[in-house]
Amino acid sequence: MDEWQLLIIGAGISGLTAAIEAHNKGYEQVLLIDYQKEIGGFTRFYMDSSDFEKERKLLDRARNLPYPIWTQSTAIGLFANNKDKSNKVIVQTPNQNLTLKARKVLIASGALEKPREAHRIAGDRPAGVMTPIMAAQLLERGFKPGERIIQFNSGRIAMSLAQMLRSRNCQLTMLDEQQYDVIHIKGSSRVEGIVVRNRVTGTEEFLHCDTLIYNEGRLPGTFFLKGGVIERDSAMAVKIDQYGRTNITGVFAAGSCTTVGDDNHLNSIELAQQVMEKLLI
Image (cartoon, helix red, strand yellow):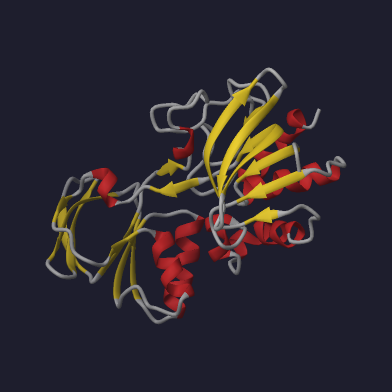
């Protein structure tokens, strides 16, 4: 293909929603790329949960789209070219690097969970400290993340992961991030416990565990935009207007990689639909 009508970077919830909307509008030359092996983004691990019923139906519809989806393919650069009104995206596939041209580009590259290291929590650096997605990936491969687990977070992703952990007979304690702060981690080769502080009372408590599942906030997956012309905020989220437009003509963005995304992907479908209303004009 010399030039795609639409190139979607990311085959998670926002990207798949956008592809469905493009198909409904009669777009034929659409390409999706995603660095993971499977489509669906990080939420695909939780599709068995009733909290993700809408996303599960969306994923089923997306599997029947006529568009090519390049998995294990990563965008490593995006360059605006206003002369011929097209944009160039450099993509690294398992076999080669390619430069693709597209009249319109949608950045739907999602976000990574913000781990313990990004919050400078004091203490040791033992094994057994992980993000929810790491725990979900271990479960998918048939491994238990631990036996005595503390999960720090709330929201539908945390609740869905908790169901998965309990189904594997893990002893699980959940802490609400609105009520507690993790201030110290203790352990040598493996986590032995954590110190938490109650935000209301200010009291501190040591809790025993061999695994801590922790994340707070997100890191937008926009590393490939570094040094480019697409404007981002201090947290690396893509700056967009109310229509999902970036500062570059023909380049849009939607979902958790943007300044209006959320940590639990609650609005990813709606944001993508809103953006596509303007993009597809």
